[in-house]
Length: 587
Image 1: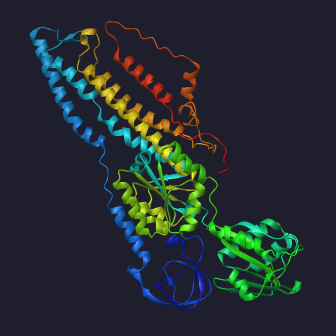
Image 2: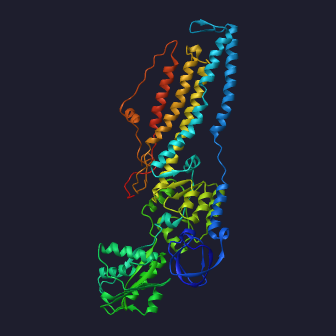
């Protein structure tokens, strides 16, 4: 790796700058070219004049941008904490009012101050209701509503290969309205590969050409050379390659290899290199030259942002290859699902050249593209979308993505990326599969819905329980003693925890790769595979009726237990479904 920023004085090489610029293909460096600290010298030797070191390098500035973005994010003050903080004061006031009211009623003769057959003083009789109110009023269930669901949700995410750094990221993911993708290593594989080739069959067999290519590139350290070697071995299978006696790489131009055992000289490089070497296309059997066809193909490939190279054996050209950073198989489905089904505004922001970026965006159906940008430009794009009212998610894997990952409302890093990107993100996908982005959003949605249900239950319990404990239903023969209030209070907290634990039934969705086109969300199974709990399966197969005998003095612990059971049954019906259609796209 290059230790500092500077300028090349002597020598030439190719440098992998993808970690900083996002450019998938290595960049040729010659005298006068600038180099960046931290980038990887792939081939050749260079004498570099150092111009910036330490905190002044481009890499240090990127890290500084990331830290500034992280520091500027304010913590969200949870509504539950505010409510729970004031809840105790309100309950104490209600308990005091309850005591005063029952003392007044007992002294005025409206009620007999008698409890379980024992006559009491009005003040002591009123104390029974006061204590019941203090016991049943439970801020614990409200305090547990969010952290228990988040704890289980993050655990489920880890089980499914989605590492979520805290509750804020888990809550924010389901509110995202705009999502920005990096290109290299995120939407694409991040490494060049041979995506097209053309060998005129009339000149020599394809297997011979692949054998010569594999032999010539077998010791190459250049990323393009390694990609050509991998493709050749894939075409040939398990074969023994001829030994190369001499190999010479010309930085930024090509490679020459000699195979003495076959008396063959192989050249692989760009058209300028081949022209300098004096090799040409041979005349085919119809008197035409293959050069015209090759030129046409190479123009098409270069228009698609691909790198075109020629292959020659001895003094004649025998074929041409196209190399590019291929789009991930699942990327088209993920992008279309985010934009068409989830309604997100999808962007691709990359440091790669505009030709390659436009080609990838066109293939994926992304209309919002920004190419040839620096890390600071990515941060600016995130801020612009946030200023427009969007909740922004950033998906990336490189050091150049880390400032934007930190600035976004939620950063999603590919786990196979750099450590800096993983550190800056709030969510880390342990695999490079983009389906994880959909799964992370879906898990956030399911967890957030569980939190809301927990809050509804917690507030509902106190809304009903406190009037019961205060004696509002005594005229109907319902009296809640303090011990029953204590039991009900404990059950309310337990029921919230049980509700959160139901998130363990969540399963990472499977994908069909086909989007629903007609009908309602439920008709098209946009919620995917329903997660059926054992309790839900029982309910689905049996109509559960719970008759309750109502007498003059109904035992409230039975009522409370019935309410808890019915609530759990309802929660199991509102299951942790996945907002992704079924299928079987290879993962």
